[in-house]
Image 1 (cartoon, rainbow, N blue to C red):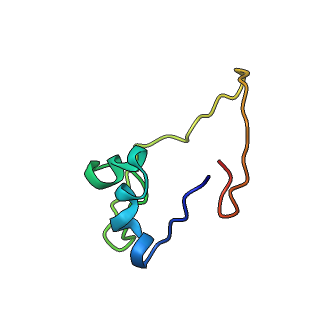
Image 2 (cartoon, one colour):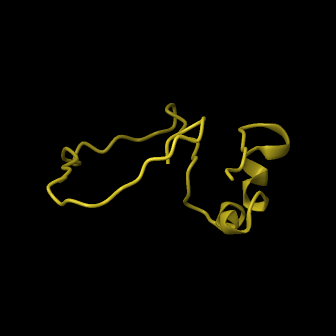
Length: 71
């Protein structure tokens, strides 16, 4: 069964770590999504190059429609 989470209230981001045991890192981690990127404070880096993606490797995958996202 999937867990109903939200962005406010009793199942908002500050509660995600307690929704299921495997979500504990949401309470203790420092670098997981979602993150709040404040565009007015963001600093660009002109030395960055374009992102290169390589999807030539094959892999098995399953998609599950959870109603609010696809996992």
